[in-house]
Image 1 (cartoon, rainbow, N blue to C red):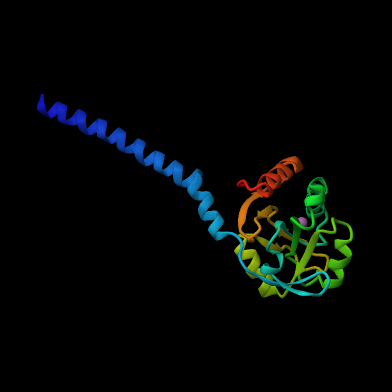
Image 2: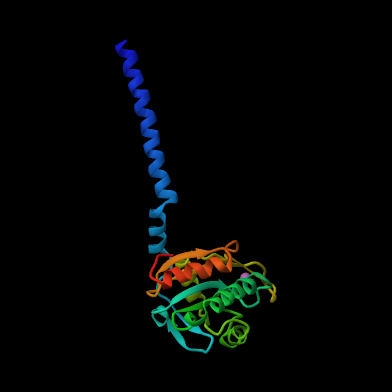
Length: 202
Ligand code: NI
């Protein structure tokens, strides 16, 4: 009987241990801690050239929230769609746009996205969106900092570039808050920005 009680105790403890490990795992993988780790790891300083030809760093954009998107001007569809969504969000934010919130577009195709090409492309979108390009190394660095994937898919002159498609939201200190995917509505982006502007978390 003592042995049977002992085995029962072991069984109960095992179930409790599995439940404990499971809840810790759920917290680590899906909970607040993951967001904190992301916030530490995504983003950071950069040095690039804007669509007016000026050399800029992350510090130039501090003091206002930023919606950041990575893409390229020759992109046949996705980039236009996403930059149009950023434009719509900035339009919807009205008077806050410009002083309190703006957009950054970072080219993942710096070979073709020269300052002149970006300046022309910029004219199709919201004036509060700044377009950025740089050397291959500078673009590789900022893409790595944002965990953005990009890859030229063919050798021909009219090549396409595969790239991840997220709109990142930075706070006034240039710190990552959250990001939006293609499934997130413009309304959701606007509501999240408004919450952050009002002093709440994203
Ligand atoms: Ni694209």
